[in-house]
Length: 107
Figure 1 (tube, helix red, strand yellow):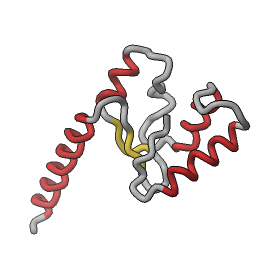
Figure 2 (cartoon, one colour):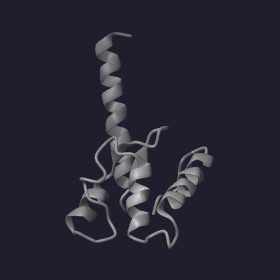
Figure 3 (cartoon, one colour):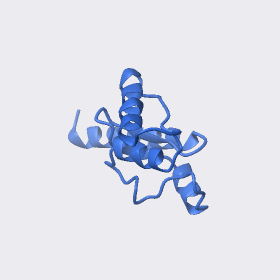
């Protein structure tokens, strides 16, 4: 297979993945195995533009942002109930780590 064909196939796959991600309702993010953001759907941007307080800012969630930091921010504002923030973060990340498909929602 020629390199041009491989590059074209990857670009096509990326477009399909992006389209599928954008079909998800609500703001969704995809994380890599190390829990860094690799992609977000358009709903994330739409929610952010409405400045709804429960949604996360672009500054907080750029590509590569770590899930631990995001969960810590959410825990600090009280969305995960009461308790020591570090403990909440540790518990939440452990829950996500135990999920083989990493489909666990953060919020």
